[in-house]
Amino acid sequence: MLNRRNFLTAAIGVAAAGTLAACAKEDGGTSGSSGGSKTITLGFSQVGSESGWRSANTDSVKSAAKEAGYNLKFSDAQQKQENQISAIRSYIAQKVDVIAFSPVVVTGWDAILNEAKAAKIPVVLTDRSVESDESLFVTLVGSDFTDEGRRAAKMLEKVLEKAGHKGPVKIAQLEGTTGAAPAIERAKGFKEVMDADHADDWKIVVSQTGDFTRAGGKQVMAAFLQSNPDIDVLFAHNDDMGIGAIQAIEAAGKKPGKDILIVTVDGVKDGFIAMSEGKINAIVECNPLLGPQLMEVVKKVHAGETVERWIKTEESDFMQDQAKDALPTRKY
Image (cartoon, rainbow, N blue to C red; front, side, top):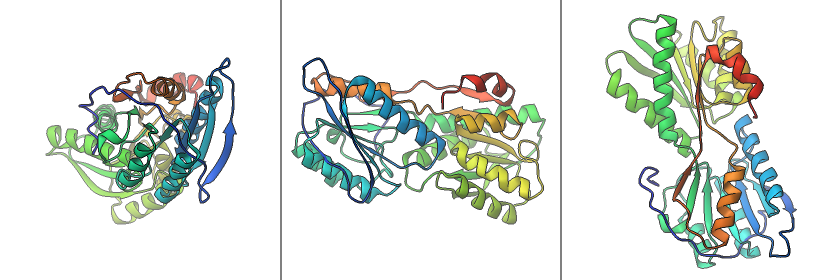
């Protein structure tokens, strides 16, 4: 897998590529002018629209492209890798200048990335990493998901202390989409802290994917409560699954945030609303507003400039007592 900690810097070439995937939802290009110089055409393949975070990410990319005056070719993959591959191949055929995408899963990209390389079209990863030859893409613009998992575990320590919880901790984990980088890495980071500092008292008693959706979170949490009614803690890989889980917890006659302590990742507005109502105990922020950073990277890549191999986003963590004050300032 892409080693997010040991990226080196790399110089980039300029290129061409893409159209839009017939099997994915597609938007037409948004053109703009750049003072007489050639307008940059960017082909962007989005994972889908499975969560509030993803919708905010899409809006950020579209608005930033418009602000930059780029011609954006946008495709929604509906959470299907085959749709993304088809979209990227169409961008190559159309000879866009730069391709960017947020990969559905981490594996299975070598063939299409080699096609882009052969066409001399630089590729930028956004939000998520891939397991592939690192020479096949220029950079990653996104978060450190493993560290988000570690931060979630550290936030849980604070939550347990604040709740006065003593003794063993039975944890349910709602995982993200199977094979997706944030699901793999958030689970990894959380377990690192758990194994190092809480091997004797913390235990993940049940763990299953909720596919990053509210419906998935609700359905899987209901099953968790059937098989493990004495769960102490829920760690959800995103807010939307956590919000869905809250519905299942309440339907089971329990109080979210009290009977079951909840830590989630993302920091979308609905998550902060739930936290301000006492239903989520802590949120680890994952910033979706990557658009401006991405457009700056695209500009540099197109100009043949050197960029860092991993451009990280700035993020914070929030406890329940910070929710009401933070809520009015949330931008997504």
